[in-house]
Length: 274
Picture 1 (cartoon, rainbow, N blue to C red):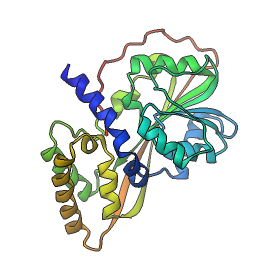
Picture 2 (picture 1 turned 60 degrees about the horizontal axis):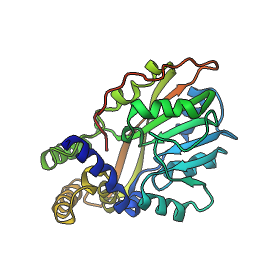
Picture 3 (picture 1 turned 90 degrees about the vertical axis):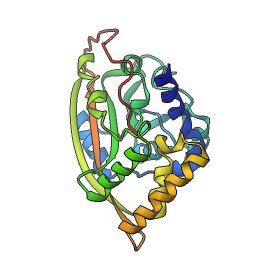
Picture 4 (picture 1 turned 120 degrees about the vertical axis):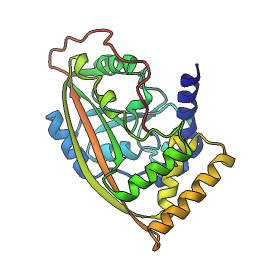
């Protein structure tokens, strides 16, 4: 099936760009974790957390910094190696959200930072519910470039034109977070706004780590990045970019006495973000 092959190819592409991912991807402001605690109704300090699709550990380290007892869960060997190099004191387990290698009711929180769209919700939601304790929660979030800013819209148009079969942006978030309420979870959602100041080179490193570019061959990738460098330098001749984000957070809380359907209805192939 072509769609399935394309999906798996994109998922496998991250291991080869783990260094670019670690150097280029944005982090998360403290306000994210403040909001997570508020929507969940409890603090991260002392909470047992699985950070699924941990990648190079960007969010995992921040969760640990808030006092969580966090374990990273990551399927890619390349990403896992970079995680261990950056975060040698943080536990890491090879695994996926669709098949969590943990005991029933063993954790308080399951998080997916930029990662829930790489799961199959008909598998990952029941798996999260299996390992969560009553009153626990699933938290999913995405840093989304703010398309209210003209240069972001212009880049979206360029990516759509040059990579029409690969570039999807983050148009599927509503569908992804729509899987939680049917599973009997109490769902809260908020959007935060923040920005970072980085160089054009930094922006291009971030772009290299995105699946729609990372999954290209080196020969295909080079002209895309060269054209983007030219366009970005025309927009920012001093080489410094104000990089704006909307941080989309959903927290889905397990009832203290949960009664969940074993097989909630979910579409097989939600539209995948970056």
